[in-house]
Amino acid sequence: MNLAFKSPVKAVLRPDLVAIADMVQEGSKVLDIGCGDGTLLEYLVHTKGVDGRGLELSQQNVNQCVARGLSVVQGDADTDLGEYPSGIFDVVILSQTIQATRHPRLVLNELLRIGKHVIVSFPNFGHWRVRLSLLFLGRMPITRALGHFWYNTPNIHLCTIADFLALVRQVGGRIERAVALAGNEKARKIPGNTLGANLLAEGAIFLLTKK
Amino acid sequence: MPEAQPVFLRPLKAPAENTGSTVAFGTDQPLVLDSGKCLAPLTIAYMTYGQLNAARSNAVLVCHALSGDQFVASRHPLTGKAGWWDYAVGPGKAIDTNRFFVICTNVIGGCMGTTGPASVDPKTGQTYGLGFPLVTIRDMVRAQAMLIDALGIDQLLAVTGGSMGGMQTLQWAASYPERVYSAMPIATAARHSAQNIAFNEVGRQAIMADPSWRGGDYARSAVHPSKGLAVARMAAHITYLSEAALQRKFGRQLTDRNALSFGFDADFQIESYLRHQGMTFVDRFDANSYLYITRAMDYFDLAADYGGVLAEAFRGTKTRFCIVSFTSDWLFPTVENKRVAHALNAAGANVSFVEIESDRGHDAFLLDEPQLFDTMSGFLGAAAAVKGIG
Image 1 (tube, rainbow over the protein chains, first blue to last red):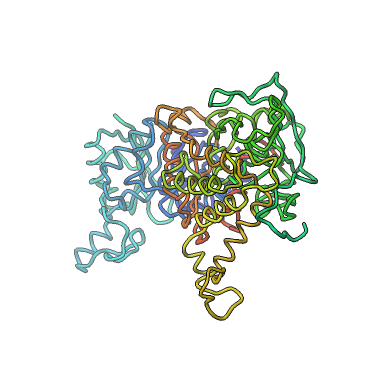
Image 2: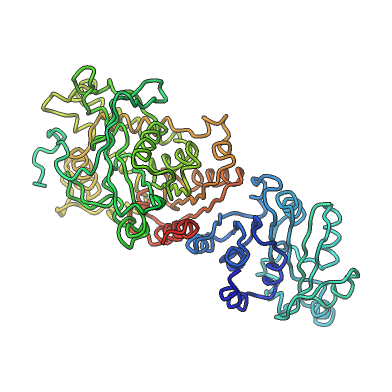
C-alpha cells in the first residue's frame, strides 16, 4: 500500500469511517449504501484496492462521485436493493443510514442477502445524554450524534444498541465485530456484555454475517 | 458553403472534401445481417482523432445518433459546421484527443460514405434505394467491429454515444463484452418505446408521401423527396427539445414582423426555426437513409435477444458502465435509462448512473452541459487510470 497517500487521507476521515474501513478486507467487492459524496468509497478504493460501488439517494452527490471516478448509482436503500443478486458483494456498508430508512428490518435482511459481510453503523439512542435529556428536559434529545429537531430529522427509526442486537437476532444475523463510537475518539471494541456500551456509546458499528 | 437557393429541390451532394478515411470489405468478407441477408461489398467511412498508443489501449469509439455522422469533432464537409460533439470531443475536452484515440464511423445505412441505400448495388449497377437490406443496431455494431478489427484494436477503452449512439453502445457491451472496457450510453434506452416508434413513423410517412420519393427510386431523378424529409426532420426536432426550452427560446415571439400576417407564412419564430432545421437537414441527409436508420432504432430491443430479461444481456460482464440521462428528456427519459442501470445492477455489473438537471430536452447531450463533461472525464479518467493510460 502507498503509505504516503494513505496517512493524509485517513487523517481527515471521520473516526467512524476509519473504524468501518478497518473492517474491510483489501481487494474485496464493496457496496457502500448511502455513500454520500464518496469520501469512504474513495478511501477504500485508493487505500484498500477494493472493487467499490455506491448507492446514493441524492443525485447531486451521485454526480459528484462519478466525476471523482467512482461507480455510483442513484437509488434508495428502501426500494432498490432487491435488484442486486444474492451474495454479490463481499461487504455491504450501511453507514449512519439505517435509522433513516422506512423499513429497517427489510433493509437489514436485504443487506445480509446481497453481502457476505455487512457493516452497519448508527447513532445509539440509548446513550446516557439522550436518556437524561428526555428524562430531565422532557424534550426530544438533541446531541452531537443527533443534531436535528424532532420535526426536521431524517432519522425516523432510531434505536439503541440493545434494540439493534435484538433485530440482528431476529433476522438471523451473527455479530463478528462490534465497536463503540464517542465523538472524535478512536472507536473502541464493545465487549460481550453490551449493557455498558448501550449507555456510554454515542454510536456503534457492527460487522455482521448471516448465521 | 454557398447559401442554399431552392433548397427543397436540390439533390443531395456527394461529400466533397475531408470525408475522413474509408475501409472497404470485399465480397469475401460479407456482413451477415440480422435479416439473414448479406451486405457485400461494404465500405465504412470513419474519422479518427488523436493518436493510437503503442499498446493500442487508448481507443474510444464514439457512436453517432440518427442524424449524425463520422464528423464528431471536425468541420462537416457539406455544412461547414463544427463537429456534432465538438463540445465534448477534442484536445483538452472531456473526451480528450490528446490522451485518447477517438474513432467515429458513419453507420451502415448512412449517407456520408458508409454503404447505405444511396450506394450503388454492384449486382445491378444501380443505386440500392429500397433494394438495400434492412439493417439493425446490431448490424451497425457488427460493421463497426469489422473496422475495429481492421484497425488492429482488440479492446476499446470506451464506447460512448447518445440516443441511437447509446443504443449502439449498449449493443457493443452486450455483443462484445471483452472488447469494451467501459461503456457510457447517454440519453438512450434498451428498447425503442411505442411513442418513439410513432414519431419515427410520422417521419417516414412524410418522406413516403412526397411524390418525389418514387418508392425510394429517386437517385437518377433531379428532384429528391426533400420536402418530405424536411417535414420528417421538423417533427423529429420537436421531440429533441422540451416544452420549457421552446418557451424560453421562442415563446410566442413573431418573426421580423409587428403583427400576425393572417396567412400561413412563418409568423412565429418557432415556425421559422423548424423550417430552417428542415431545410438545412436535406442538404446533408438522404431520405432513404432516414427511413432505414429510423427503422433500425424501432427494431432495437436488447432484452428481446436475451429471453426478454435485460440483465441477461450483461450477465458476467466486466465492462464498467456509466449511464447518463437528462431531466427534461422526454424522448429517452430518465426512467428508460434507469431501467438499463437497474438491469446492470441485477447482472452484478460495475455501473454508475447520473441524471443531469437540464431543461434542454433530449438535445442536451449535444450541448454545452458542464455536468455531462465532468461525468465523462471522471468516468473516462478512472478507466484510463486503471489501464495505465497517461
